[in-house]
Length: 114
Image 1 (tube, rainbow, N blue to C red):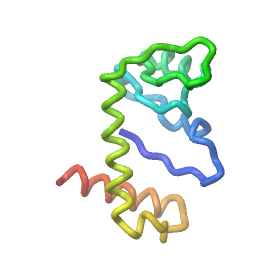
Image 2: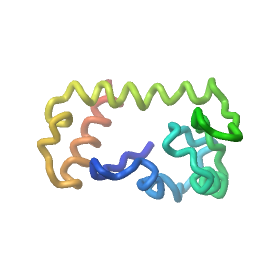
Image 3: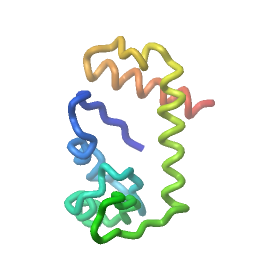
Image 4: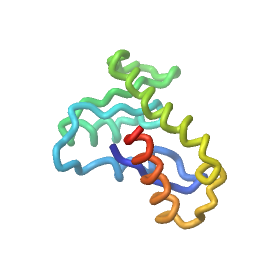
């Protein structure tokens, strides 16, 4: 798993390049509708993985995805929900990206150990 921090005004899809170049390519990359562009889907295919991304509701040609595999994205949502319980992360006391990312890593390790 990978974590990246961007500015509030930055769209999610702009940070997608941080999630490429795996040593051992994953079999699937699960993402939400914000990552549903053709360029991102092609980048995932170039990595040798399957894109599990639902199509937007207004898509002219909906692209099918595996709903059972997409349900595993629940782990990410639960991570964010638990993260909001830590006041230090929620209010982002750490203003520098590297410090905030370090706090996120400590939180992720803590979640993993529990």
